[in-house]
Length: 315
Image 1 (tube, rainbow, N blue to C red):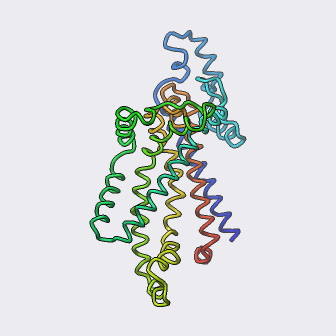
Image 2: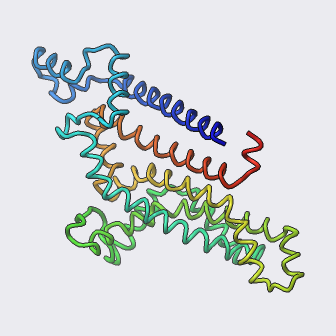
Image 3: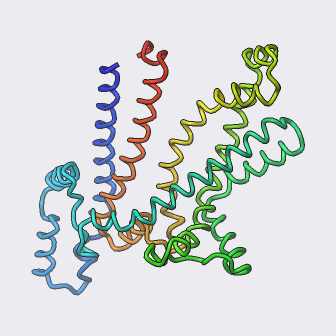
């Protein structure tokens, strides 16, 4: 068991190192000079050279990569030239928006997806089942930013129930802050809820035809009791994997939604940093997001390794 855990942790670290190399290379090959972008085209050569030296752009590429990775490992994500603040400070300020948005979207996606999936599975091949699965297919196919624009048009412009964008801050009160996150939460969660609903339906339908379900009914359990005690528990095993991964997808998907609703979260920070060629901010935050996704995958693997003895025998 310990050897298998160590192997998976080693694979996680190797994948994270490879991801850092890919991210650094992708930013490095972008056209344009970051120092020139900051100072403008009419900057004096000596001023430009001084800024390039301060940003480390006059050093070899391998040295810049090594310094960035070493700082990241030590918790130093670098300093933003645009904001004159450490990237760690910027991330901490934006997480108070991005994390509640991602968690609220996950709760909405799980609640809606589970309810619709179970409801459809128990009415398999009925008109309601076909209608719900058709709606989930639309939810998967249509991008979340389109949902965002429709929600703004209906609930912000026409009905004036929720604000169209912006974030007042938690200091203005929880109600005002959460009201500004309602539409982004729904827009971000709808595609994930549609995916989850289809997976729950398929998993539950498969479970309903297992032998132990017939055995449970033969022992005197009602249809509802057999579903609650046996079918749902076993059907949730593959669903839990999807639920764990969805949080990572929601964090990454918030980049577009936060820009649609002008929310000061991590997604909007990345978008602004790309526009301003703030290389350190882009690289560090993207690596943080990638690392979060990989860490969630690692946690899921270790959980399955702990609860399923078949995996320990197989590896």
